[in-house]
Amino acid sequence: MSETVTLSSRMTFFYKVVLPAVWISGLGTGTLLMWVSGGPPVAAKWWFLVVWCLGTAVTLWTCVPLKRLRTDGGNLYISNYLDKIVVPAGLIDRVTENRWINIHPVTIYFREDTEFGRKIVFMPKARFAFCWTSHPVVGEIETMARSAAAGGAS
Image (tube, rainbow, N blue to C red; front, top):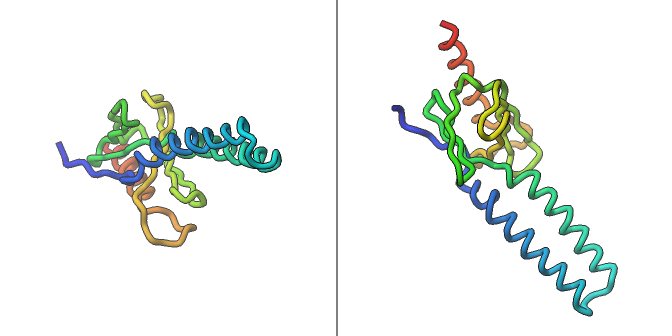
């Protein structure tokens, strides 16, 4: 078996687990305490509630779905920190990225359902480049998929 290489950022656990827990419970508790105590004016309470709701929605949408991703060139080793699965690179259908979100999430779509569904999202390792340029890991995964497809066709 080949050596595996981690494609996801070391910060994945922080963004997937720690940040949502701190944001939802910490700011949620603070917002609740503002409402039950005399505290600030009602307008400030509403602003905190709106910010907490929007922040929670964005966090649940962008951070919680993140997966840890490793590869050996022929397979993807995907983890949500509770379960781990192996997906052959030949099942990769396409790869997209969102260049405008600061964690630069990359989505891998599969030809078939996996235990994690038909797609997974991961946060690639940080790099210093312009935000409108594609992350190199996208090309690496696309090359791996093409290579697997070519190998499977012979």
